[in-house]
Length: 318
Ligand code: NAD
Ligand code: UDP
Image (cartoon, rainbow, N blue to C red; front, side, top):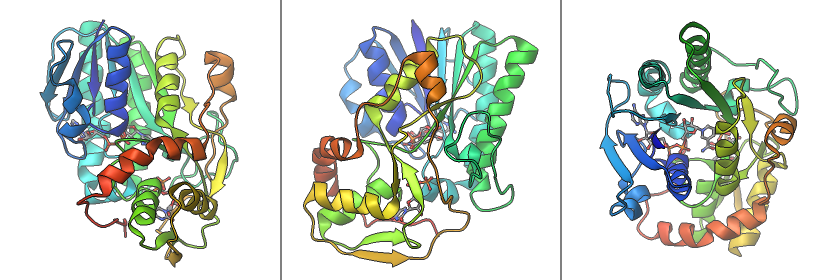
């Protein structure tokens, strides 16, 4: 198949391009490089089945006939989407509609990369797909949360009104090689800080939880979902839950770092708990993650070690 990956020069998108090429497909990667990097796809430069299209998907575009569209374009780290708030809202709304129009035109399958942020600061734990979420629609994070909630709504609408063959994956915190070192996310900040001997910046008291999925597990889940007929949202993430303090401890162990922990203020509307219920993915796809946090960080260590050379300092959102 010829497939389109929007946001294919980003962290998750570039791994998805690799996996799709590995399955024998031809891949068009459309990316405007807002938060992505050509380094992430540099190894594909001489791959005849790979095309890079520098394209803002908020502008109408046509990459020619494709059989499937993976719509992954969007800033994803809080630092990035708070810096690019309007662009984030545009790519979730206009960008999603342009990609859905393309899917309609070519009768292509469409898969939306949605997010656990649709659940906001959840009152149900762990989060099942049936939970409608607890999102502040006017807070700073709303540029991302509501953009993705709109993207889910418009995806379902194109299915209902235009018969587009759609899928929605709700991705939970994912990490691994190519996670941008200065994107401000917790794994990139902690790895960078541990490897350079700086203090690890734990926001708040560190009791908030997240569950971290290694990139190869995440991509395997996304590809498995793309091959089913399921069109309702499906969680793909790792259900092992860590407090942020525990996460800091694992990073210190894996990197054998003697960095200290320093507490900083908690960002506004920072979700207190987040953990996917993956019962649906297990039943539907026979999928579950196989790489735990310690192993995943070990596998990412070489990448982070080489990335810290000459890197900018860790960032924070606000
Ligand atoms: P990323 O920032 O590394 O990649 C996003 C890519 O989208 C970048 O290459 C960026 O340049 C591109 N992009 C942004 N706006 C664009 C536009 N208007 N036109 C074309 N390209 C554009 O982020 P990521 O972590 O790889 O996330 C990829 C997708 O997965 C996003 O949709 C994100 O919401 C979703 N997601 C990721 C995570 C995670 O933990 N990484 C969690 C939940 C959801
Ligand atoms: N966090 C932290 N220190 C950092 C970066 C993040 O304590 O240097 C916390 C952040 O407040 C949140 C969690 O780690 O509670 C995950 O943050 P991230 O930005 O990775 O993603 P989120 O899940 O909030 O979108």
